[in-house]
Image (cartoon, rainbow, N blue to C red; front, top):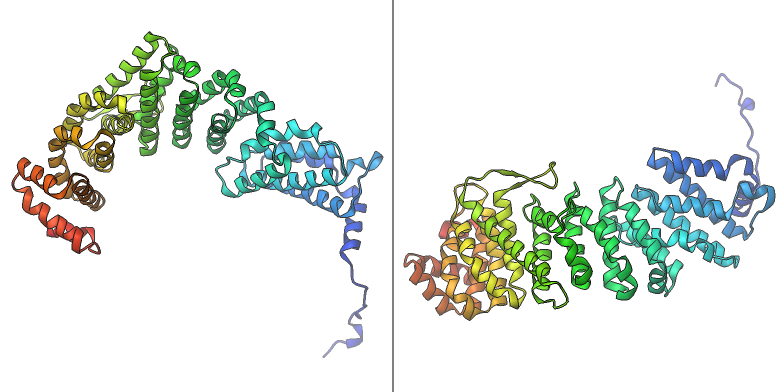
Length: 482
């Protein structure tokens, strides 16, 4: 080689650096990290990954102090200060980004372990962390939800319910603030977390705050995100069920926050899940308003008549031209007539779950049948799909003997669904046929089919044979053989 090998740098053997040396070196480098500057970065940075990095650095600092079992005071408090660290973690727990919340949960666990290890007072920080950890236990992100549950277990031990009941007003105010978040997942999380109050807590501890909480939930019924509207529909129903005296009078108030009007709008929403959850809540409201003895007669009558009239008009609207209706409560969305009819079919099916509403269901069956026979628009198969899925449950809830009087009118839509050209609906229709045969008895069900239309008899026999001997056949095979 042209160069002298003696010019190569010689290797110098150095003693290995132990983890303890590494820790001591890091802790002594206090000039490199200023906790106050780290806090400002966490609070004011627009980049969520920078905020996550800030929380992770804080987490590492706490971890190192856990290893060293040291706490610094005086001039060294800039490096690690419990109050400042707690505020930073609380900021991270309130962050809009899930990965920042996840990092903050890990940092909280380390901080709480540190406080317990040093036998420091933790009550001063309870109100800071209680509402934030409460909310994150219902986060949409699974990883955050599990980590928050671990943090809650360390924080509350076995006293979670009593802690929540004691500071319920504080938690409710925090939820009210987060309901105004720009992140739809945070608003959805608030809906799920609010349901915990009526599911797990003592009713009397929740009662003073019911109006405030219910008012926040009503605002979410017109949220721009369908996930939030879906959750709000269900949680509103739970509050009406547990606190009818407080909630029902708020439903039909003649003001901008007319919850009943919002639920009707959701009954015609373009999301199937929102229509379904709105139907569940409206059926529950109808049952409670019909049976409650503590409500004012006028309140019960107005709610009851309003829902029944809405269902009837919603089903009858399919007999007119299919067009869009402006939503009076939220101009950014619109309701389409077939969607309203589909929501009304779901509401009828939900009403059959309550025995005292069976009479109203029978009054509306003619409108339901009329909607199923109106097929001059391509989305009519959605109504058929809903009817097919809900019909067996409707028969079970009302009773076979009572439903036989109107069952004949559903035979033609069932056979039409077998030939509609949509494989999924064809499969559901054939499964529905089999369920009805088992429910009513094969001979009785076939007799009704033949009586309705003799041409349906041979097709029914072929269908039953296919279902009995060829469950492995594809839906296309069934359509071809039928």
